[in-house]
Length: 280
Length: 284
Picture 1 (cartoon, chains in turn cyan, green):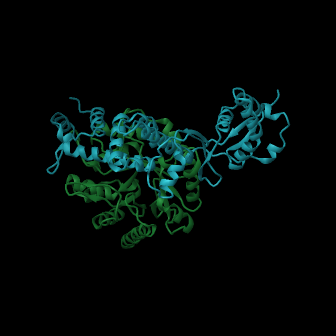
Picture 2: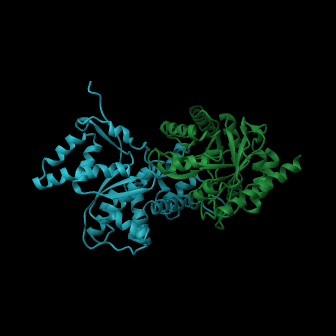
Picture 3: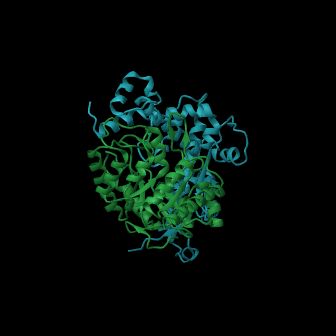
């Protein structure tokens, strides 16, 4: 067997993420002894197992830190099982932790350890919300909207102008209102009880000017409009796309609400610029 | 801060610093305690914006900040990650850190990142491999690269020299600096049964630009570098020995687990200042 640097690293990288002790596997222990010297107190396999345990402790801590509400939902033993299964399925391949945790929501959505489908859906929603919270916290900055620029726009600008949203804004749809529930569990200290029935929610998660992360609940139509604006569709065409499939009554509702929505988004710092392309 | 004439590798002695950790942010920013400098974990600030960079700017407003990394994987066998180096360089423009440090270790392979600081086999081949990569990193970052000795819990059958001979060979061939972690020397000496004084005595003094001090956790059969608890007396003794050898060098207290109140961390930093001054005054 080769004993060059790449071979040593390939062996250790294959056993360190494992949940099985190297000391408990004679074949692995024999391989470990080819690479690792051991000492009078610890066999080569026992030395490798120190790193294997550290791998588990470190990544369990990261997952518990980044998903405190999910951990609260599951309780320690089940969260441990979830973390073990997650790390088996998605061993970290990159240095940044945000890349490691990206698949947690989709993993939660299929993890068989939940007692019911409803709990699984709730957990996946919560994991998605917790990833978004971390994302919003460290996303790019943007200067606030210049009110003078807004005031100086020509009347027909809204036909063409692209409304620029803050790069930290995230639009999220949930089956359960996990944004409120997480706050109740972690901030108000309420008991971790999952609602009996789903209650869909549309939210914008954003960072205010003091860099504090907040959620804003949106009407479904406002949520769709914000999505179209995020895609770069100017306001008037976006309203057209939004209203077209709606019944007349809802179209009236959108027409009468859009001014209020827009004011709210500018006040919250969700809208940061209006980009009017030159007519040429 | 110490006089600028006390330089090594052209780098200043910044005095006594502490690692900037989240539980202490507000108190440090509000009270501006008497420490000479702060060390950040670079990777915590490699983000597009928001809260982390705002906090960094608050730190920079009052203290020199040194970047310390954990994911360079200078001994790795996967290609150097130039995207990562570009991010580090962008952060260096913000911090104006006069050097950037990381560990003499490897952290993973292409498909697995252990997020750990794994030791390397101490061989001439590995010296050449690491030194070549370190030169590329140093050229790319355009600030001196300073490598830190890690704590280790295993040794390799293929090693053909001592850790300190390996460390010296790498930094000399790469022409980079040394971050001497005296707690790591102690931890590894206990785990592997070597004389920590021999290690300190063998380090190229002229390349040491920074020293780390920290606590650890003793599990009986082995010691883990947990950065928890105060620095123990044998590590203070090693620090005295290191300062006697290398002179006034930027010194930092690291505390990452069971993080205490800021006052406790500052008391530990003050102890480092007193120890350092005692040794230096005796040396005069």
